[in-house]
Image (cartoon, rainbow, N blue to C red; front, side, top):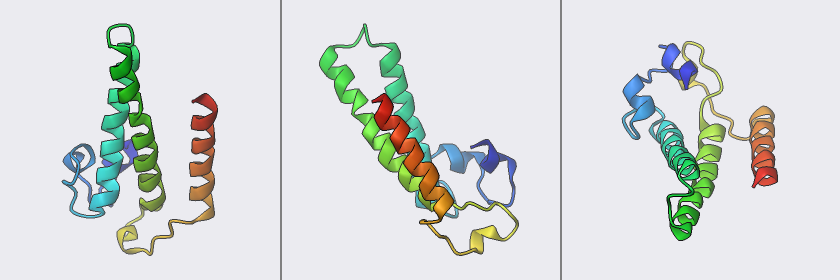
Amino acid sequence: MPTVLARDTTGASPAAVFVPFAAEKLVLNIAFGALALYVLLVVLASSLLIKRLPRKAWRRLHYGAYVVLALGLYHGLLILDDFALGACHAPLDPLAFEKVLVELGLVGVLLALG
């Protein structure tokens, strides 16, 4: 996220990064990243409050991790990988080897921890 905020070439304002569907360009890609962040924060908060939450509520909140995984995969594969000037008009390759390798590595880590 800091990269998007630091670059004026993306056309994404701070509001676009933190408020889902507020971006002018790449609306779904950026919105899914923001939604994944918020669901991740809920899962994190429920982890910290595990002793205060009923077990059933805690488990339901933790199913949000799967939502984070799906939204994060979408965001990671379909977000632009080049922040150079004019890159927003470059063709997007969601199956670029580097992107798929990173995403599969993250999924593997999540499955190993889960």
